[in-house]
Image 1 (tube, rainbow, N blue to C red):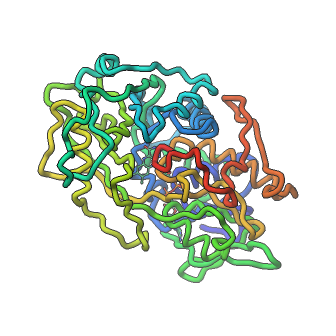
Image 2: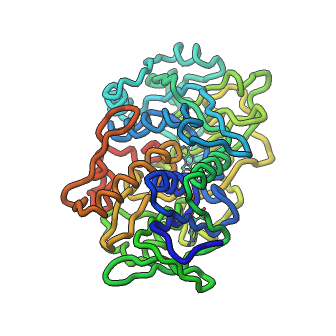
Length: 436
Ligand SMILES: Cc1cc2nc3c(=O)[nH]c(=O)nc-3n(C[C@H](O)[C@H](O)[C@H](O)COP(=O)(O)OP(=O)(O)OC[C@H]3O[C@@H](n4cnc5c(N)ncnc54)[C@H](O)[C@@H]3O)c2cc1C
């Protein structure tokens, strides 16, 4: 039974919302996660590819992913509890990242990996094949649309090269991982309300005072955190804080393809993740000896911004076929089935594809949004980060002028939360894609 007041209300019970609540509950705050869906992780988290990789274009991006990686490895210890549904598993596959002109031949990425002492190997075409024999190492890029006469035709004998990052993989079940965190949070006293939709943000004396649900129920809290995923901009509008933000968020439609692996190849056991800016897609093993193929948002593609996250096309389009054919450029013998399988869902995309972890101009109202298709892996770190931020700001620190910093537990690196500010200028070092 929901009480009438809490210390902190978290809007959303996806992976990030649950991790934020868990950390706050560990610090003794009485938390309530509110979600309009029937269970934790049923929003965009449920369709996440749940890739855990370390290559990002900025040292801050790499360091957060590096920190997050250890939480996934140490999952049981992080949770400090068991879940009757079982715990998720991290599956290590390694990742081949292809060098392209657009990603500056991975110069920024390698520099950032070096700074964090992440091990990787530089590969030429033959080296790529030695990692996975079914890789076609010819160049096909820069990517073009499927109607272009150049589509599917090699543009060179070999790609510019690649790096192999052995510490990369994915989480077996993103929805279950969220349930795991829900149970961990509950063990620390956190509460959850499902099938409950936030329709308004309450204010009193110039600060947030709680939320109003669609059925009219009012729940009081001095702190409210927007972790509403692709609905984040709607919650910010309810709070009246969107206007003052320099970086904003919008839902972006994505199709992810599942296709059978090339015949005779045990992709589940031998498959490697590929981040392929040359073909314009990424791929990883998927259960049932399938290959999962997502988009790396090449320049030629029209990004499909969605006006209403509750009403968009959930069917596959021509994008599915284009993406599968792009995957087939890199994987010899990949079949292009007639039956389209996979998922359609939304990224909560920020203007520079870097998340916003911040306060707002409304005292007590915070946001962990703009995850841009690449923050599943960082969710446990985001939980710690938001807790540090909330505690320091509530303690009087002026985060906009004097950004809160904290030392990350595993890497020992200082995380400057100001990097994720809503007031930042667009970060020119970003890849402006899901790579972040
Ligand atoms: C197709 C796809 C592939 C991805 N692949 C990867 C990947 O490989 N690696 C990676 O690191 N990241 C990936 N991501 C990104 C990652 O999944 C997200 O960053 C992460 O799941 C976001 O979690 P969240 O808790 O912020 O949001 P969500 O899981 O979307 O949760 C938000 C919740 O808020 C609730 N909500 C919204 N509005 C209201 C309201 N008014 N009242 C009550 N509840 C509300 C929703 O019901 C929802 O459950 C991918 C994302 C997608 C869509």
